[in-house]
Image (tube, rainbow, N blue to C red; front, side, top):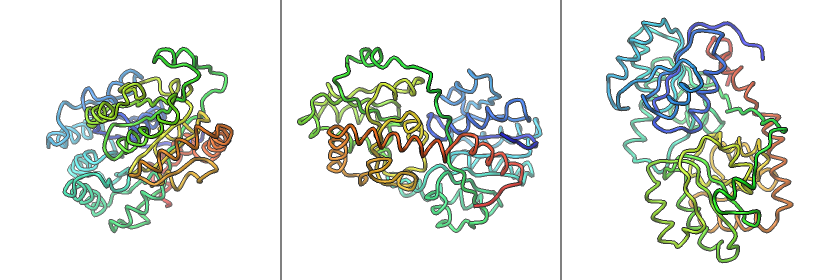
Length: 375
């Protein structure tokens, strides 16, 4: 991969959880290691902080809550102390405090990376404030990176000029085909065997992810296929509510909550189907990772997922917020394994050809350097 020389880069991600945005930050930091000065600002003890620290990448953790103005002052001190010239901000709080600090430092080379379109489940005032922050960043001449066409379109609805937005899809490394995962052992560890049909759901347990609709869909599916098992890998604010829903629905023998996991690739290899029932998405890494493992996917027809995948060819896509269509999608995948496998293989080829990690990093670093700002 040909990479050009760059000035010092500061990446800011003030998320408490680890999701697709954090995967992208980690990959970019890894690419910068050894080629230019860089740093990643995180919240202290966040999952991203711990993962960067474990990989011995340059992480600068701050001990404040996400709403604390001292974040801006701390980022300002970091910029001045280390001489950072380029700032890339991920997630809403990063967009706010990072932009304030950048302007206080007199920096003009800022990037606002946006991973999702409007969250339909978020309170109106929260959405309004977030969108005002992005509009403020635009007024202060920030460049924008959108991770999918739907995010690009969303930004233009906020009256952010199209020429200020670059579309850089998420990218993923294709797993080494020679690497073997012990599928049977993983299944046994959860009390399952090869006769069970395992559905894996990867992501934060938040209302926008639509997990409640999937649990509702399972109520009817288990009446037909009692061998189905659903595995939630991830954590978040909705965990208790979802566990309560499972208990009330008498699905405790069918649904397993595993919390945050580091072994996602192994879990995908042990599964039969990947499901993402989100109400809103950009282009989620969890989906790309599933496709890279040739796992058949069942997703809702929203955002970057609807733009990237093709119904009946690379995925089964259903309406969001609809338990009935989710149950039909699950049944179609269970009852036609040959077609499901063909879709998994087709999705793998799509990811391999169009969404490589090399393309994502190369274009991102080109934007950092001011050499690529095409939409």
